Length: 419
Image: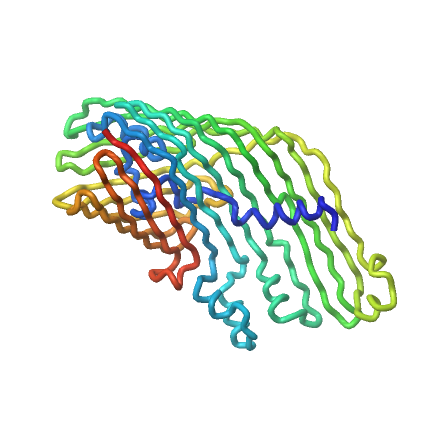
C-alpha cells in the first residue's frame, strides 16, 4: 500500500476522533460541570464564548484572567463502556450479534468528538479579549458494514455503504467583546454586547463523496467502492455574535445571544483532493487461487490539488436564565442551532445546572442536559479556590446516568484568576 493510500485512510479514521465543538459546547470546566447551563452565568472572560452583553452587567468582575485549560468529549449513538467490556475478545453467539446490531440505528452509527479550550482570556471592566481553539466534526458508518462484519455475506443480498460520511475542521479564534449598559425601566440592570471573531483555520478534512456495495450470489462476490476526500491545511475568516442580558427586579439573570449572525471562512491553503476506488466482479476463492489477484480487482487511486472553497459557522440562538439564593445558584440553558453543520444538528439542546456554594473554597456543581447531538447527559464538577486563583474540574457522562452505561464521556480542567 502506497504512502498516499495510507494518508487517505488515515484522514478518514481521524475524522471521528478529531477535536470538535459540538452543539453541547465546551469552553471551560465550570460550564461542563453545569452541563452547559452557562449563558446567564458566564462573566468576565467567559462572556466572550456565551454572551458579550454579560460584560456590561454589574456582576462582571473588574479583572479576570482565564489561563490555558483544555477538555474533550467523545460519544457515539450506540455503544458504551459496558458493551465494550462485555463483547471485546468474546466469541459472539448469534443472539449477541443480533443485540449489537439492534443498538445501531438504520441510518448508521454516528460518532462525534467534542473538545477545545481557552488558551488565554482577559477581561477588564466591559472589554474582553480571548484566544481559544475551536472545531467541529462528526462521522457516520453504515449499518450494513456491521451486518457484513458480524454475520458474513448473505447470499443474494446487496450491502450498501453509501451512508458513510464525515467531516471536521479545527481553528484558532481570536475574539474581542464589549458590553454596554443601558437603563431600562423595570429591570435592575440591562446591557447589549457584541463579539468580533477572527478565525484562523488550522486544518480540515471532509468526505465529499462516498459509495460502496457488495453483492454475493452463486457466481461469486462482486462490488465496488469509491471515496473522495478533500483536505485543507489553513484558511482565514470571521464571525460576529450579538447579545442582550438583564437582571430583573427579583434578581433573575436573563441572557439572550445570537452566535454567528454573520460568518465566513475561506479555506485556501494546500487544498488537496484524494480519490480511492475499488471494483471487482465475480470474485471467488478459486479465481484468487488460479488467477493473478490484480487482474480480478480494479483499483483507483489519485490525488490532485483542489480549488479554494468557503464555509460558514452555523447560526445559533442561545437563551439562558439563572437565579442565586442562599447557598445555591440555579441555571438553565437552551441552544437552538438554526443551520446544520458537522457535529451540530437542529435538535434543541436544553440544560439545567446547579452550583452549591456553602463551602466558598470548594463549590460543587451538577448538571443535566437533553437533546442536541446526544439524548441525555449528566455532569459533575467542582472548584478549588485559593484567594483569587480558581482551579475547575468536571466530568460528564453522555446518554446514561451511570458512567459504565454511557456512550460518551467528557473531562475538563482549567485555571482562572479573578480580582
